Length: 116
Image (cartoon, rainbow, N blue to C red):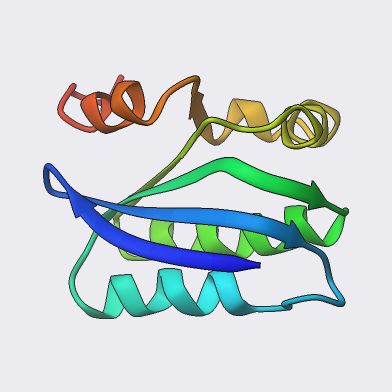
C-alpha cells in the first residue's frame, strides 16, 4: 500500500493506493491519520480511487481512523471509493456514519458546507 498526504483547500487529503490488507500494511493508514491529527488537522479525506484490493481488515482500520478523528472533533470523509469498498461499507452499514463522494473535488467542497 502507498499513502500520500497533501493539503487541498484546508483539507488533509490522504490518497491510498495499492493493496490494503491485514497482512500487507496493518496500521499504516491509522498512523498517518493520527499524525495529521497531531499536526492539528481536523478535516481529513481519504481518497480511495487508487486501491486495487482490500480485505475485511480495511474496515477495522477505517473505523479506527474514524474514531480517532471523532475524538478530536474532526471530520473524516471518503472520496472515489472503489466497488469493493462500496460493498464493504454497505454490508457493514458504515454508509450511515461516513460520508462518501464520487470525486475528490466534491468531497473537498463538502467540508465547506455546514454539517446537518
